[in-house]
Length: 399
Image 1: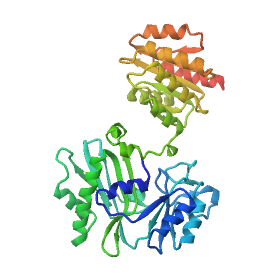
Image 2: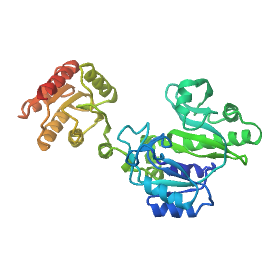
Image 3: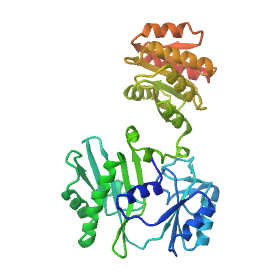
């Protein structure tokens, strides 16, 4: 789960981490009111969307010369003007894709006199099973270029969660950022605070870009992104309450209500599979046969008829879907349960696209009998390769 910048900063502030003063706003009037609570005379007006690259982003409705999603405002009148332009319009960044995201929230913060910018992030290193703290002296909007062109300027410090954060980790971060004196000590303290927040909140990623040194010698978090392990949210109802469903694909939100793992993709073949590995293999073999998957959908190992029916409906709500491939291996999940869900869903939504089903495993014959006796034009497949060839052929024939 992702949250907005202003929400992440509020969480970090609870750990004693320095952030510039700021207030969220959903209307122009609230943005002006927020600026009035800050000392000024320099303000920063920031679009709040779940995507990076906001500073370099563009508002398509405002023309090519319009300013991006992070703006410096030199007066309250400027805040009013910027808020009026940004709210309700669509911001397109390198991370949103061409469709962009509508800006429904702003964050108005106090301006900061910046001496230097740094990059500091934490994430789960799945290869080592440890926490990786990534640091660079080259913070700012061009960090992706730094990673690509000068990777030697990025340092990674791994931390064993069984051992926890140790003083040498803090020193390594401060050394990587080339800080000395009071700033060196402040950085060591900050690194420990970030690690504590990361672990306490079950984060998957905590990125600060930039971390800035101010002209009066402070370290402040100027921008941050946080994401959390969805499987651990039950331990953090306060964090779960920060979820903004307007920033998520409506189909993915609906799928989460049924505990389905669904991700929208750009193809035309809908997929319903049980098991993440099998789902990935199914998508690969669809591409191998010359088509593209429209989604990743894992119904899980213990799905009910209700969940399968919901999954079917979610797939069919995508207008790009021209055919559906169901690939089920019945272990804990029984093939007859899947088959019954497929039949019920197909009848309820008045199925109008080709459907190929491959079943294998527990109660497979019962499942095949249910499909065969359904009276629906369901194409049976013997194995995964056969299923992929059949769904691609059916879609081409129907086109």
